[in-house]
Length: 133
Image (cartoon, rainbow, N blue to C red):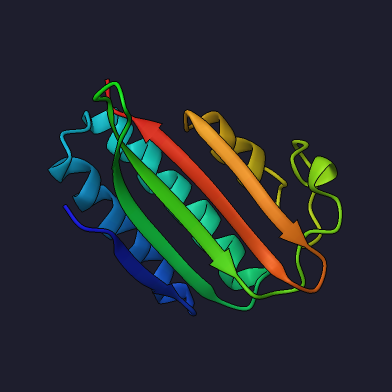
């Protein structure tokens, strides 16, 4: 299966990203619970790209590790103002908007690998991976 890029520019794109990730995860043989986890992560992180980053994209990459493990890598990119304090942003309850501050830390708990790259003024890239059981 090939990588897929999904535009994230409006509220409508959030539900599209969620649905597309669920379809990809199902095609890769993920269990229903993991499809739901990945769809939830796609929804949360897509919302951040649109709300805080001014839009961007999601790249969904089916991936295979050297030991033959199969997984799905999701990369969320924007060219927004960036995250000034990543450590604070990863704390439950922290929000620069009016949210509950659950998006980033909650998403991290639903995946096996989680990485944020961000520089103020240069945008943000969040990469997550969920491995199939």
